[in-house]
Amino acid sequence: MPVYAAPLDDMRFVLHEVLQVEDLSRLPGYEDATADLVDAVLEEAAKLCENELFPINQSGDQEGCTFENGVVRTPKGFKQAYEKYCEGGWTAISNTPDYGGQGLPKTLQFVMEEMVSSANMSLGMYPGLSGGAYNAIEAYGSDFQKSRYLPKLTDGTWSGTMCLTEPHCGTDLGLIRTKAVPAEVDPHGQQTYRITGTKIFISAGEHDLTDNILHLVLAKLPDAPEGTRGISLFLVPKFIAKDEGDTIVPGPRNGVACGSIEHKMGIKASATCVMNFDAATGYLIGEPHKGMRAMFVMMNAARLAVGMQGLGISEVSYQNALAYAKDRTQGRSLGGVKAPDKAADPIIVHPDVRRNLLTVKAFNEGARALAYWVGTQLDVYTKHPDPDVRQEANDLVSLMTPIVKAYLTDQGFENTVIGQQVLGGHGYIAEWGMEQYVRDARIAQIYEGTNGIQALDLIGRKLPQNMGRLLRRFFHPVDAFLRERMGDADLAEFVLPLAKAFGKLQQATAVIAQKGLQDPEEAGAAATDYLKLFALVALGYMWLRMVIVARAKLAEGANGRAGFYEAKIKTARFFTTRILPESSALFITIMAGKDSLMALDTDSF
Image (cartoon, rainbow, N blue to C red; front, side, top):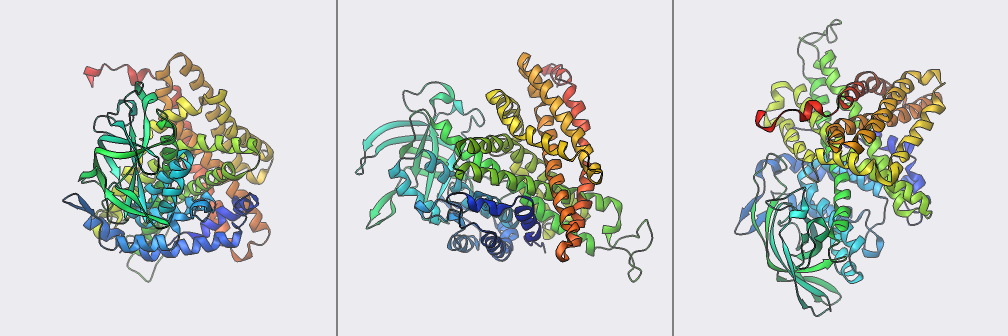
């Protein structure tokens, strides 16, 4: 019953017309990333997601994963779909050619993650976790570890996990109890360790999709300092790798096992596991007691990917709500009959239904532009030959990561609820698929660092870092962009409201910085509202950029796409008049300070 078609027209508009993604082909190593190649990748990704992943999304949710005698089985059709995913090279799209990857821009990985999340969020979890493991090993692994394990993660025959959380600690990783004890040196001259402990909430910790699973595990060595300064990162394979000719294959079973899987609200076809490590053989990744650095390589990539999950599931919810609103007939238009040949008008004529649909549409298109922009900056950081340019790009990505993760997942969840509301009673019935989107979307606000933690990261780390250097990467270009267009009367309806919201963001930033130095609770009390205010301004900035492009295209004749560009401008107008004004309420809340939050005694709750 549900429907999904990759929004290729909008994706192309953002990539080619707003961001000029083909400029990435000028960077060393991205020479093949031409506009034609980008379009070919989009089209093939759409086919995979629409024809292979989406058809088993509902059935996967209904069947879920099963656990028996330590073995996890994914739902019917998942293994075959995963194999097609790997055969198409999608596990290798942005991995380096040195280890079998295609070496394409990471921006295309962002696009792929959106499509996969729309089509089948649960299935997308398995290769998604492998990507995080790949990034950590590539950044901090030894040459031996890279050559041994990265090709297997690249071709998808082996998968990876991130084993961080323990029963007594999640965010505060300094409390972990998993131990690593030095053991023998293996035949390859690699120092081994015995890893013992229990990890929980491990996505893709056990499954039947790959031949082997590489667990990246946080643990503490015997001489570890207290807290996060004593955390090390270890690679613990499900099966010890064994040489067989010129390749490696799974060898003896390691001392790691799945103790159980969680019964969850959503993403039921993604195995969420309790993993028990019993003197399992592990290999140190990077330096002793420096595991947090490697962990953040995984976490930051994962946080951006989770943001794309929020966008992806919002998009598929919108498509289904829109299809229903055009087909369902109930009542007559307040402005007069619109379908005289029918007993009632389609519900899309009703103002409140249109408000719901436009709220989601305006978010999806603005968030897509914002996320893809961050993706291009990640590519600039990765490949640009000028270290200063790389640093500027990395600063922007670092600043925007908590915003992409938190705002796209918060609003993504809200949008699935809005989409469900459009369907009325049918939205509550499993047959129509909308209730699954609500359930699946909810986890994205929680894992990879809850959204409250993202807000604290923005306030406590990103704002003061290097005396506000990260902030300047956004504030300065936005300020210049607005100043250049302040006198354009045709753009005034978009520029002036955004300038006012931007001014509130600047003022809130200054107040929080001043108060936060004197009282950290003041900054903490403002964090979530500040992140939302920042996100609204960022989306407003992207909408203004899209309006300018759309107006220019219309002036040039639009090449038969006048309706598309006109819809862009109208949707931007809705965002500017109906969503961006939320910035005023957020500003007032931020300025209220901490008193009303902190005054109540604990016993009075």
